Length: 203
Image 1 (tube, rainbow, N blue to C red):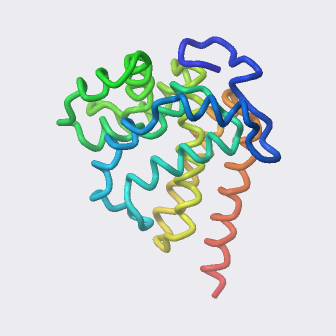
Image 2 (cartoon, rainbow, N blue to C red):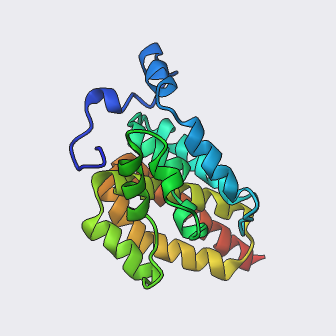
Image 3 (cartoon, rainbow, N blue to C red):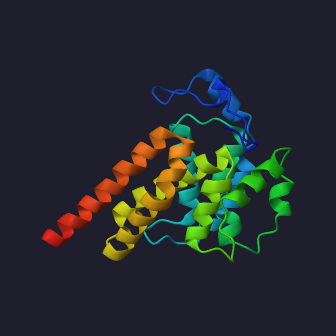
């Protein structure tokens, strides 16, 4: 589904299995993604708890959307900079808005998945669940899949447990509304993290 809540057309989501078709490659080629990626490189210096940096996480989220067959240009552009406003609040929004004719829609989608300074994590995730556009629900689901995969490189048991609990309580319902296959992956990822914790304390 697109940013305005309209169902994505069949050409907006391609089959997950197999290689990208020529038509999808042409659509991706024309998306003008490079300026958004350039902005995202400002996140390279921001380390992540699980290793790597925030720039890699943006690209990983983009890749997850592609893996699930999403080829909507606004959604993909937003995925590349989805943490930019939150992690660099001093970022001049005009640098985003001046990129192309879709920049306004991209920026609005980024704001939907950006945690506001007055929001607790629970309020933030509940807002997306209750009021998020279909594209925001999909983007947040892909974002959390990336984050859950990164937990495989984290040994902090309390953090893993807290994050798994949060994912079950708040993100499972988001993914259930967004994409049932994404929900299934999140369920599996949470299960593997809980299995890791149980084995860790058996040793």
